[in-house]
Image (cartoon, rainbow, N blue to C red; front, side, top):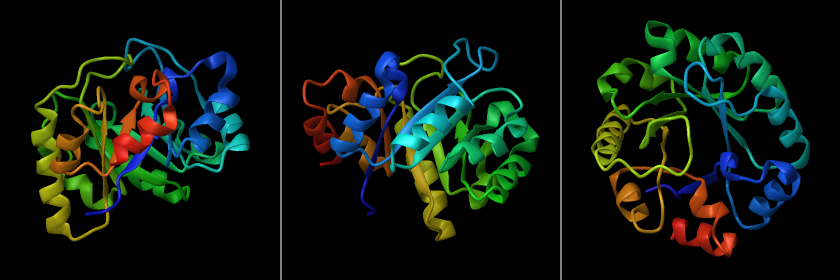
Length: 217
């Protein structure tokens, strides 16, 4: 089993001191920085965009994991890649039949690519696209806001994706995003997650380094 990576979501950070927050994550042992990009159309919330990614890229050596919760992501992937995104993930629900084309476009920029599904979307909708992916992201809450409770049925989806990835024999990460904490992290890893997005669990912890170590262990 591959080492689990922890990707704290800066959606839970204090935006008034983002530089300090990111340095704190780097010093606390985070592996990636998860950037939740929301447009107020695909999801009912607005967060930040390309400029934030560009500025984060200047202050951290950690890979920037850009989760695009936006309509028409194909219009923006090249600019996110240029801004410093290491991996760009796009939703099946935003791309539908266009998903494989968008994944290829991301790859053409030099960034890694990933497909995302919401809690009410079956894995079979992205099965054909998985061989193109560097990562598959299973949402364990409905996207839009941080601090939601983990949806237990997500574990079955993790197992399903893990079985597909093993059958393909490819090195594809499986990411889980939403409501992961020390109480459920063992179940999530056992089901197949290799990258764990954590927001409040890390940012509200009294000791972030201890929390990241706990999630990894």
